[in-house]
Length: 416
Ligand code: PMT
Image 1 (cartoon, rainbow, N blue to C red):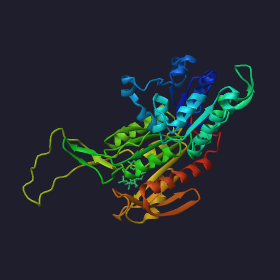
Image 2: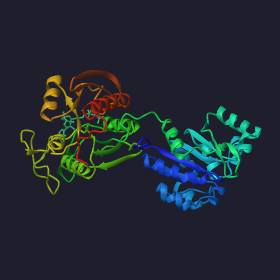
Image 3: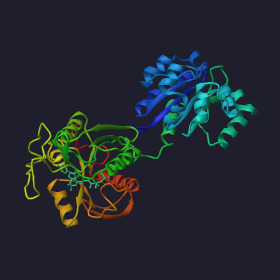
Image 4: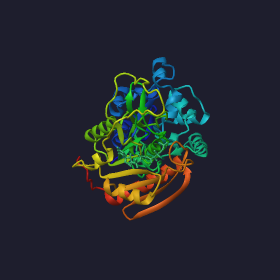
Protein backbone atom coordinates (compact mmCIF):
# COMPACT_ATOMS: atom_id res chain seq x y z
CA UNK A 1 0.00 0.00 0.00
CA UNK A 2 1.51 3.36 -1.07
CA UNK A 3 0.51 5.23 2.12
CA UNK A 4 3.50 7.54 1.93
CA UNK A 5 3.61 8.05 -1.80
CA UNK A 6 5.64 11.13 -2.76
CA UNK A 7 6.60 11.84 0.86
CA UNK A 8 10.21 12.66 1.65
CA UNK A 9 11.31 11.30 4.97
CA UNK A 10 14.63 11.62 6.76
CA UNK A 11 15.30 8.70 9.08
CA UNK A 12 17.84 9.79 11.69
CA UNK A 13 19.65 7.00 13.49
CA UNK A 14 21.54 7.55 16.72
CA UNK A 15 23.83 5.20 18.65
CA UNK A 16 21.86 2.53 20.46
CA UNK A 17 21.29 -1.20 20.31
CA UNK A 18 17.85 -0.60 18.70
CA UNK A 19 19.62 0.89 15.66
CA UNK A 20 19.30 -2.49 13.95
CA UNK A 21 15.49 -2.00 13.91
CA UNK A 22 15.97 1.17 11.87
CA UNK A 23 16.88 -1.01 8.89
CA UNK A 24 13.38 -2.53 8.90
CA UNK A 25 11.84 0.93 9.36
CA UNK A 26 13.68 2.24 6.30
CA UNK A 27 12.58 -0.79 4.30
CA UNK A 28 8.92 -0.29 5.31
CA UNK A 29 8.89 3.44 4.57
CA UNK A 30 10.42 2.74 1.18
CA UNK A 31 7.74 0.09 0.57
CA UNK A 32 5.02 2.58 1.53
CA UNK A 33 6.22 4.78 -1.33
CA UNK A 34 8.32 7.32 0.62
CA UNK A 35 11.58 8.72 -0.66
CA UNK A 36 13.86 7.99 2.29
CA UNK A 37 17.20 9.54 3.18
CA UNK A 38 19.11 8.18 6.14
CA UNK A 39 21.22 10.41 8.36
CA UNK A 40 23.37 8.65 10.97
CA UNK A 41 25.28 10.01 13.94
CA UNK A 42 28.89 8.91 14.34
CA UNK A 43 27.97 6.46 17.11
CA UNK A 44 25.08 4.97 15.09
CA UNK A 45 27.59 3.55 12.59
CA UNK A 46 29.07 1.49 15.46
CA UNK A 47 25.78 -0.41 15.59
CA UNK A 48 24.73 -0.67 11.93
CA UNK A 49 26.59 -0.02 8.70
CA UNK A 50 25.68 2.84 6.37
CA UNK A 51 25.95 0.36 3.49
CA UNK A 52 22.96 -1.65 4.75
CA UNK A 53 20.86 1.50 4.98
CA UNK A 54 22.01 2.72 1.59
CA UNK A 55 20.86 -0.54 0.03
CA UNK A 56 17.48 -0.39 1.78
CA UNK A 57 16.76 3.30 1.15
CA UNK A 58 18.15 3.37 -2.39
CA UNK A 59 19.91 6.66 -1.53
CA UNK A 60 23.34 7.59 -0.24
CA UNK A 61 23.54 7.71 3.56
CA UNK A 62 24.54 10.99 5.18
CA UNK A 63 26.89 10.83 8.14
CA UNK A 64 29.00 13.94 8.38
CA UNK A 65 28.49 17.67 8.62
CA UNK A 66 32.05 18.33 7.56
CA UNK A 67 32.23 16.11 4.48
CA UNK A 68 32.64 18.70 1.71
CA UNK A 69 31.79 16.21 -1.04
CA UNK A 70 28.55 15.13 0.64
CA UNK A 71 27.65 18.74 1.50
CA UNK A 72 28.20 19.72 -2.13
CA UNK A 73 25.78 16.98 -3.25
CA UNK A 74 23.09 17.74 -0.64
CA UNK A 75 24.07 19.90 2.31
CA UNK A 76 22.42 19.95 5.72
CA UNK A 77 20.23 22.93 4.84
CA UNK A 78 19.08 21.31 1.61
CA UNK A 79 18.32 18.07 3.45
CA UNK A 80 16.39 20.02 6.10
CA UNK A 81 14.37 21.77 3.37
CA UNK A 82 13.93 18.58 1.36
CA UNK A 83 12.19 16.65 4.13
CA UNK A 84 8.43 16.40 4.66
CA UNK A 85 9.14 14.74 8.00
CA UNK A 86 12.14 13.77 10.11
CA UNK A 87 11.96 10.71 12.33
CA UNK A 88 14.77 9.81 14.69
CA UNK A 89 14.67 6.14 15.56
CA UNK A 90 16.21 5.18 17.87
CA UNK A 91 16.78 8.45 19.71
CA UNK A 92 19.34 7.84 22.47
CA UNK A 93 19.33 9.64 25.82
CA UNK A 94 22.44 11.54 24.71
CA UNK A 95 20.79 12.62 21.44
CA UNK A 96 17.65 13.76 23.27
CA UNK A 97 19.76 15.81 25.72
CA UNK A 98 21.78 17.46 22.94
CA UNK A 99 18.68 18.13 20.86
CA UNK A 100 16.98 19.74 23.88
CA UNK A 101 20.02 21.98 24.32
CA UNK A 102 19.83 22.97 20.64
CA UNK A 103 23.35 21.75 19.81
CA UNK A 104 24.33 21.42 16.16
CA UNK A 105 27.75 19.79 16.19
CA UNK A 106 26.71 16.79 14.10
CA UNK A 107 24.76 16.57 10.86
CA UNK A 108 21.60 15.09 12.38
CA UNK A 109 21.42 17.76 15.10
CA UNK A 110 21.93 20.51 12.51
CA UNK A 111 19.12 19.11 10.34
CA UNK A 112 16.73 18.97 13.30
CA UNK A 113 17.51 22.63 14.03
CA UNK A 114 17.20 23.72 10.41
CA UNK A 115 14.07 21.90 9.29
CA UNK A 116 10.53 23.27 9.21
CA UNK A 117 9.13 19.76 8.72
CA UNK A 118 7.55 17.86 11.62
CA UNK A 119 10.17 16.09 13.75
CA UNK A 120 9.36 12.85 15.57
CA UNK A 121 11.66 11.10 17.99
CA UNK A 122 11.46 7.49 19.03
CA UNK A 123 13.37 7.21 22.33
CA UNK A 124 15.00 3.85 23.06
CA UNK A 125 17.25 3.26 26.06
CA UNK A 126 17.63 1.44 29.32
CA UNK A 127 14.53 1.84 31.52
CA UNK A 128 16.40 3.64 34.30
CA UNK A 129 17.87 6.13 31.85
CA UNK A 130 14.37 6.66 30.38
CA UNK A 131 12.81 7.22 33.81
CA UNK A 132 15.62 9.56 34.92
CA UNK A 133 14.30 13.04 35.68
CA UNK A 134 16.83 14.61 33.30
CA UNK A 135 15.50 12.57 30.38
CA UNK A 136 11.86 13.17 31.34
CA UNK A 137 12.49 16.93 31.65
CA UNK A 138 14.09 16.92 28.20
CA UNK A 139 11.12 15.05 26.75
CA UNK A 140 8.72 17.58 28.27
CA UNK A 141 10.68 20.48 26.79
CA UNK A 142 10.78 18.84 23.37
CA UNK A 143 7.02 18.29 23.51
CA UNK A 144 6.56 21.97 24.31
CA UNK A 145 8.49 22.70 21.10
CA UNK A 146 5.98 20.58 19.12
CA UNK A 147 8.41 17.68 18.68
CA UNK A 148 6.36 14.50 18.41
CA UNK A 149 7.35 11.71 20.75
CA UNK A 150 6.65 8.12 19.77
CA UNK A 151 6.93 6.69 23.27
CA UNK A 152 8.99 3.59 24.08
CA UNK A 153 7.17 0.40 24.99
CA UNK A 154 7.57 -1.99 27.91
CA UNK A 155 9.49 -5.22 27.50
CA UNK A 156 12.73 -7.04 27.98
CA UNK A 157 15.75 -4.88 27.25
CA UNK A 158 19.15 -5.73 25.79
CA UNK A 159 20.69 -5.35 29.28
CA UNK A 160 18.22 -7.88 30.74
CA UNK A 161 16.03 -5.32 32.59
CA UNK A 162 12.30 -5.36 32.04
CA UNK A 163 10.47 -2.02 31.76
CA UNK A 164 9.76 0.95 29.52
CA UNK A 165 12.54 1.87 27.13
CA UNK A 166 12.20 -0.51 24.17
CA UNK A 167 11.79 1.02 20.74
CA UNK A 168 8.33 0.23 19.27
CA UNK A 169 8.28 -2.14 16.31
CA UNK A 170 9.12 -0.52 12.93
CA UNK A 171 5.61 -1.30 11.63
CA UNK A 172 4.09 0.75 14.49
CA UNK A 173 6.45 3.66 13.81
CA UNK A 174 5.69 3.57 10.08
CA UNK A 175 1.92 3.54 10.77
CA UNK A 176 2.24 6.54 13.11
CA UNK A 177 4.22 8.40 10.48
CA UNK A 178 1.46 7.96 7.95
CA UNK A 179 -0.92 9.81 10.30
CA UNK A 180 1.32 12.91 10.11
CA UNK A 181 0.17 13.50 6.58
CA UNK A 182 -3.36 14.36 5.51
CA UNK A 183 -4.58 11.43 3.45
CA UNK A 184 -4.08 12.59 -0.12
CA UNK A 185 -7.12 12.43 -2.37
CA UNK A 186 -4.96 11.05 -5.17
CA UNK A 187 -2.50 9.00 -3.13
CA UNK A 188 -0.70 6.52 -5.32
CA UNK A 189 -2.42 7.66 -8.52
CA UNK A 190 -0.60 8.30 -11.78
CA UNK A 191 -1.77 11.54 -13.35
CA UNK A 192 -0.79 12.86 -16.76
CA UNK A 193 -1.35 16.56 -17.48
CA UNK A 194 -0.79 18.63 -20.61
CA UNK A 195 -0.28 22.39 -20.32
CA UNK A 196 0.54 25.46 -22.35
CA UNK A 197 0.20 26.14 -26.07
CA UNK A 198 1.65 24.29 -29.01
CA UNK A 199 3.73 25.95 -31.68
CA UNK A 200 3.21 25.00 -35.29
CA UNK A 201 6.15 25.93 -37.47
CA UNK A 202 5.60 27.95 -40.64
CA UNK A 203 9.28 28.44 -41.49
CA UNK A 204 12.53 28.49 -39.44
CA UNK A 205 11.55 31.74 -37.67
CA UNK A 206 7.75 31.83 -37.63
CA UNK A 207 5.01 29.75 -36.09
CA UNK A 208 1.28 29.60 -35.31
CA UNK A 209 0.38 29.50 -31.62
CA UNK A 210 -1.98 30.95 -29.01
CA UNK A 211 -1.92 32.89 -25.74
CA UNK A 212 -1.83 29.97 -23.31
CA UNK A 213 0.74 30.69 -20.60
CA UNK A 214 0.66 27.27 -18.96
CA UNK A 215 -0.45 28.82 -15.63
CA UNK A 216 -3.63 26.73 -15.39
CA UNK A 217 -1.92 23.43 -16.26
CA UNK A 218 1.02 24.07 -13.93
CA UNK A 219 -1.33 25.02 -11.05
CA UNK A 220 -3.27 21.80 -11.63
CA UNK A 221 0.01 19.90 -11.58
CA UNK A 222 0.95 21.37 -8.17
CA UNK A 223 -2.52 20.59 -6.79
CA UNK A 224 -2.34 17.00 -8.02
CA UNK A 225 1.10 16.55 -6.40
CA UNK A 226 -0.27 18.05 -3.17
CA UNK A 227 -3.05 15.46 -3.34
CA UNK A 228 -0.45 12.68 -3.44
CA UNK A 229 -0.40 11.84 -7.15
CA UNK A 230 2.68 11.02 -9.19
CA UNK A 231 2.42 13.54 -11.97
CA UNK A 232 3.87 13.66 -15.45
CA UNK A 233 3.51 17.07 -17.04
CA UNK A 234 3.81 17.52 -20.78
CA UNK A 235 4.31 21.20 -21.49
CA UNK A 236 4.31 23.26 -24.63
CA UNK A 237 6.66 26.26 -24.80
CA UNK A 238 6.03 28.21 -21.57
CA UNK A 239 8.14 30.01 -19.01
CA UNK A 240 6.62 28.45 -15.88
CA UNK A 241 8.77 26.91 -13.15
CA UNK A 242 8.39 23.15 -12.84
CA UNK A 243 6.58 22.28 -9.61
CA UNK A 244 8.56 20.04 -7.25
CA UNK A 245 8.36 16.25 -7.64
CA UNK A 246 7.07 16.37 -11.17
CA UNK A 247 8.37 14.67 -14.26
CA UNK A 248 8.23 17.33 -16.97
CA UNK A 249 8.51 16.68 -20.68
CA UNK A 250 8.82 19.70 -22.96
CA UNK A 251 7.39 19.65 -26.45
CA UNK A 252 6.68 22.20 -29.18
CA UNK A 253 4.06 21.05 -31.65
CA UNK A 254 0.75 19.19 -31.34
CA UNK A 255 2.25 16.16 -33.07
CA UNK A 256 5.13 16.10 -30.57
CA UNK A 257 2.67 16.52 -27.69
CA UNK A 258 0.59 13.60 -28.94
CA UNK A 259 3.69 11.40 -29.31
CA UNK A 260 4.84 12.29 -25.78
CA UNK A 261 1.38 11.60 -24.30
CA UNK A 262 1.08 8.20 -25.99
CA UNK A 263 4.66 7.27 -25.02
CA UNK A 264 3.98 8.04 -21.34
CA UNK A 265 0.73 6.04 -21.38
CA UNK A 266 2.40 3.12 -23.14
CA UNK A 267 5.30 3.09 -20.68
CA UNK A 268 3.33 3.53 -17.47
CA UNK A 269 -0.40 3.10 -17.04
CA UNK A 270 -2.02 6.39 -16.08
CA UNK A 271 -5.11 6.67 -13.88
CA UNK A 272 -6.15 10.16 -14.95
CA UNK A 273 -5.40 12.29 -18.00
CA UNK A 274 -6.08 16.03 -17.74
CA UNK A 275 -5.78 17.80 -21.09
CA UNK A 276 -5.33 21.45 -20.21
CA UNK A 277 -3.06 22.34 -23.11
CA UNK A 278 -4.35 24.70 -25.75
CA UNK A 279 -3.43 22.47 -28.67
CA UNK A 280 -3.44 24.05 -32.10
CA UNK A 281 -6.15 22.44 -34.20
CA UNK A 282 -4.25 23.14 -37.43
CA UNK A 283 -0.66 23.31 -38.61
CA UNK A 284 0.87 24.56 -41.85
CA UNK A 285 0.63 21.82 -44.41
CA UNK A 286 4.22 22.49 -45.40
CA UNK A 287 7.00 23.84 -43.21
CA UNK A 288 9.25 26.00 -45.36
CA UNK A 289 12.94 25.15 -45.04
CA UNK A 290 13.99 28.76 -45.46
CA UNK A 291 12.44 31.99 -44.25
CA UNK A 292 9.48 33.03 -46.41
CA UNK A 293 10.53 36.15 -48.32
CA UNK A 294 8.50 39.31 -48.45
CA UNK A 295 7.27 38.98 -52.01
CA UNK A 296 4.03 40.95 -51.83
CA UNK A 297 4.24 44.52 -52.95
CA UNK A 298 0.79 45.92 -52.09
CA UNK A 299 -1.91 45.36 -49.40
CA UNK A 300 -4.24 44.17 -52.11
CA UNK A 301 -2.10 41.12 -52.75
CA UNK A 302 -2.45 38.09 -50.46
CA UNK A 303 -0.29 35.24 -49.32
CA UNK A 304 -2.04 31.94 -48.67
CA UNK A 305 -1.00 29.58 -45.93
CA UNK A 306 -2.39 26.06 -46.38
CA UNK A 307 -3.29 24.41 -43.09
CA UNK A 308 -3.86 20.79 -42.27
CA UNK A 309 -5.63 19.20 -39.31
CA UNK A 310 -3.58 18.32 -36.22
CA UNK A 311 -4.26 15.06 -34.40
CA UNK A 312 -6.73 15.37 -31.52
CA UNK A 313 -4.70 14.22 -28.52
CA UNK A 314 -7.65 13.63 -26.20
CA UNK A 315 -9.52 11.64 -28.80
CA UNK A 316 -6.47 9.53 -29.52
CA UNK A 317 -6.18 8.67 -25.81
CA UNK A 318 -9.91 7.93 -25.55
CA UNK A 319 -9.66 5.71 -28.59
CA UNK A 320 -6.88 3.55 -27.15
CA UNK A 321 -8.32 0.11 -26.64
CA UNK A 322 -6.90 -0.10 -23.12
CA UNK A 323 -7.28 3.54 -22.29
CA UNK A 324 -6.69 5.71 -19.25
CA UNK A 325 -9.74 5.16 -17.00
CA UNK A 326 -10.50 8.84 -16.38
CA UNK A 327 -10.29 11.57 -18.99
CA UNK A 328 -10.66 15.27 -18.29
CA UNK A 329 -10.77 17.86 -21.05
CA UNK A 330 -10.93 21.64 -21.03
CA UNK A 331 -13.14 23.63 -23.35
CA UNK A 332 -11.99 27.12 -24.24
CA UNK A 333 -15.09 28.75 -25.71
CA UNK A 334 -16.09 32.22 -26.81
CA UNK A 335 -19.75 31.57 -27.72
CA UNK A 336 -22.52 29.05 -27.12
CA UNK A 337 -20.47 27.95 -24.14
CA UNK A 338 -22.54 25.13 -22.63
CA UNK A 339 -23.69 23.62 -25.90
CA UNK A 340 -20.15 23.55 -27.29
CA UNK A 341 -18.66 22.11 -24.10
CA UNK A 342 -21.29 19.37 -23.89
CA UNK A 343 -20.75 18.49 -27.52
CA UNK A 344 -16.95 18.26 -26.96
CA UNK A 345 -17.45 16.07 -23.92
CA UNK A 346 -19.63 13.66 -25.89
CA UNK A 347 -17.54 13.68 -29.06
CA UNK A 348 -14.23 13.24 -27.21
CA UNK A 349 -15.68 10.60 -24.89
CA UNK A 350 -14.69 12.42 -21.68
CA UNK A 351 -15.57 11.81 -18.04
CA UNK A 352 -15.39 15.51 -17.27
CA UNK A 353 -15.01 18.77 -19.13
CA UNK A 354 -13.97 22.10 -17.64
CA UNK A 355 -15.44 24.99 -19.51
CA UNK A 356 -13.84 28.42 -19.57
CA UNK A 357 -15.16 31.48 -21.23
CA UNK A 358 -12.05 32.73 -23.02
CA UNK A 359 -13.84 35.76 -24.45
CA UNK A 360 -13.39 37.38 -21.02
CA UNK A 361 -9.77 38.67 -20.84
CA UNK A 362 -9.86 38.80 -17.02
CA UNK A 363 -9.92 35.00 -16.87
CA UNK A 364 -8.69 32.09 -19.00
CA UNK A 365 -5.70 32.62 -21.27
CA UNK A 366 -2.63 34.09 -19.57
CA UNK A 367 -4.55 35.50 -16.62
CA UNK A 368 -3.71 34.62 -12.99
CA UNK A 369 -7.39 33.90 -12.36
CA UNK A 370 -10.01 31.71 -13.91
CA UNK A 371 -13.71 30.89 -13.54
CA UNK A 372 -15.09 27.65 -14.92
CA UNK A 373 -18.09 25.40 -15.17
CA UNK A 374 -17.38 21.76 -14.47
CA UNK A 375 -19.48 19.25 -16.36
CA UNK A 376 -19.36 15.56 -15.56
CA UNK A 377 -21.60 12.52 -15.39
CA UNK A 378 -24.44 13.95 -13.25
CA UNK A 379 -22.43 17.07 -12.43
CA UNK A 380 -22.78 20.70 -13.45
CA UNK A 381 -20.99 23.09 -11.14
CA UNK A 382 -20.13 26.74 -11.65
CA UNK A 383 -16.95 27.88 -9.86
CA UNK A 384 -16.55 31.65 -9.51
CA UNK A 385 -13.45 33.72 -10.32
CA UNK A 386 -10.48 32.77 -8.16
CA UNK A 387 -6.75 32.28 -8.51
CA UNK A 388 -5.71 29.40 -10.75
CA UNK A 389 -4.05 27.82 -7.69
CA UNK A 390 -7.25 27.87 -5.59
CA UNK A 391 -9.31 26.74 -8.56
CA UNK A 392 -6.91 23.87 -9.22
CA UNK A 393 -7.30 22.53 -5.67
CA UNK A 394 -11.09 22.51 -6.11
CA UNK A 395 -10.84 20.89 -9.54
CA UNK A 396 -8.46 18.20 -8.30
CA UNK A 397 -10.82 17.34 -5.46
CA UNK A 398 -13.78 17.13 -7.89
CA UNK A 399 -11.72 14.97 -10.24
CA UNK A 400 -10.62 12.70 -7.36
CA UNK A 401 -14.24 12.25 -6.18
CA UNK A 402 -15.50 11.50 -9.67
CA UNK A 403 -12.58 9.13 -10.29
CA UNK A 404 -13.31 7.27 -7.03
CA UNK A 405 -16.97 6.87 -8.09
CA UNK A 406 -15.97 5.54 -11.50
CA UNK A 407 -13.05 3.37 -10.38
CA UNK A 408 -13.81 2.11 -6.85
CA UNK A 409 -10.82 1.03 -4.71
CA UNK A 410 -9.37 -2.26 -5.83
CA UNK A 411 -10.93 -2.04 -9.28
CA UNK A 412 -8.72 -0.89 -12.12
CA UNK A 413 -10.07 -0.46 -15.59
CA UNK A 414 -6.60 0.14 -16.95
CA UNK A 415 -4.44 -2.66 -18.35
CA UNK A 416 -1.64 -3.21 -15.83
O1 PMT B 1 -2.44 28.34 -20.03
P1 PMT B 1 -3.24 29.47 -19.40
O2 PMT B 1 -2.79 30.81 -19.88
O3 PMT B 1 -3.28 29.37 -17.91
O4 PMT B 1 -4.76 29.32 -19.91
C1 PMT B 1 -5.51 28.21 -19.57
C2 PMT B 1 -6.39 27.73 -20.73
C3 PMT B 1 -7.43 28.78 -21.07
C4 PMT B 1 -5.53 27.42 -21.95
C5 PMT B 1 -7.07 26.38 -20.25
O5 PMT B 1 -7.85 26.65 -19.14
C6 PMT B 1 -7.90 25.75 -21.34
O6 PMT B 1 -9.04 26.07 -21.55
N1 PMT B 1 -7.29 24.78 -22.09
C7 PMT B 1 -7.90 24.10 -23.23
C8 PMT B 1 -7.79 25.00 -24.43
C9 PMT B 1 -8.29 24.32 -25.69
O7 PMT B 1 -7.52 23.96 -26.51
O8 PMT B 1 -9.58 24.08 -25.70
P2 PMT B 1 -10.36 23.39 -26.97
O9 PMT B 1 -11.78 23.65 -26.66
O10 PMT B 1 -9.80 23.84 -28.24
O11 PMT B 1 -10.02 21.86 -26.82
C10 PMT B 1 -10.82 20.95 -26.07
C11 PMT B 1 -9.97 19.91 -25.40
O12 PMT B 1 -9.35 19.08 -26.39
C12 PMT B 1 -8.86 20.46 -24.55
O13 PMT B 1 -8.77 19.64 -23.41
C13 PMT B 1 -7.62 20.32 -25.42
O14 PMT B 1 -6.43 20.09 -24.64
C14 PMT B 1 -7.95 19.09 -26.24
N2 PMT B 1 -7.38 19.08 -27.59
C15 PMT B 1 -7.66 20.08 -28.46
C16 PMT B 1 -7.15 20.03 -29.74
C17 PMT B 1 -6.32 18.95 -30.10
N3 PMT B 1 -5.79 18.87 -31.30
N4 PMT B 1 -6.05 17.98 -29.22
C18 PMT B 1 -6.58 18.02 -27.97
O15 PMT B 1 -6.35 17.13 -27.16
